[in-house]
Length: 199
Length: 365
Image (cartoon, rainbow over all chains, first blue to last red; front, side, top):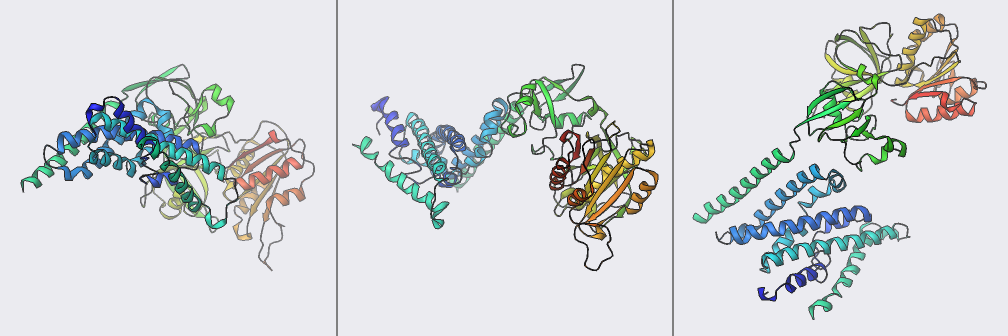
């Protein structure tokens, strides 16, 4: 990744994070909330926005912590614990701000916001950005793109499951069975994007 | 060694810094300052913001009925919030119809005090007080129903309309949260220095378990009240009472009132129990039948023991009512019991011609 690529590069990073490298369907991160909260489009959308917001925010903060604190001190091995602490603090802060200034959104996100603290997609996002040595701008783009990708995936899943709720599904496949099969099919579809940007 | 120390320092430094930032943010963001609440356009009270309207009012000794402890599930704590309540929250939506929303009705347990508020509180709620009392006696009525008698200490007297209820405070025990639970007064309203409650043990119930297993004679308790609109109407219409289990309480209170005030309205009381030994207050009811010429008590046992001595009505209390009652146009119905009993009784009474707006009930069970 060279910084001379200008404005185009963050955009490419963002799109590839959202589609070809979809954090959920290509990397299989953040599966538990994906399976648990994808029954209705409405709640999926709430959780999706929360993930976009937190993933973008923590990417920036963790980038700063990693490159400005841990690397100069030769403490890269502490990145796991630092990232987790950062994510937890950020979520708590966002919760406080929302409660004060946007009570409706706060109520809507409800339990999802604290749940995000332990969503592995968030930690995964921060770790990828470090491994790939993104610049700050690219890290922001990557965080935002990953969040959007995760949201798209859970929205699509919720849409499918809302339709499936009225279908006759063989008894043994109901619930997690059919859901996992759908995830697999969706992942195949997303791999199709590889050719679009990879070429 | 140096790396270990640096690692520990870095982690604790950053974690400590973040914690400090969060504490600071909490101080600044969660600090709503002093908020003025204008009530009914006439009195203003000032309170520290940040809590729910329900909690804030109760700290100012204004008690709004609430049975769920502020969790937004009972919807008893509805108040009109005219200004400053913020947008309607998703947690309130299921409990408010279009007319209530237009009038500014909110669940006061969900509305947070964040700034100046303008609210309306029905006048009768100002009569609600907090009472300190001593448990004077506990008496077994059946295997799972007890009568609790409380002597008031502060204030020493209570005034209420027969049929109303109070909210008994349950302190924390065995790691439970503190809760308030609603119980109707069953005692003679002429005795203003005592109240009696009839409580049925609910398996796993926080308050009833506390009453049955922890509360002792001589213990201090607190409650607030009175609440509720369940009361005798001011007409001369003949009445049908239907109750089951601890639903006896408000009806007994109303019977005391009829005796005290010489109300000679015709009244038939169907009281249901599962077995004959689950009937209670039979002597008291016999005394009422003597004192009130128009009053008839009809105990109904659903499952009398085979070969037992039970001679009276059997089956469901609602079926017994259906068998015994003529056309009920012009009658009034007063019901108290479980939601299932109320539902069944309303169906029977309307079937027999009683208009639905003449049926009054309390669903505390």
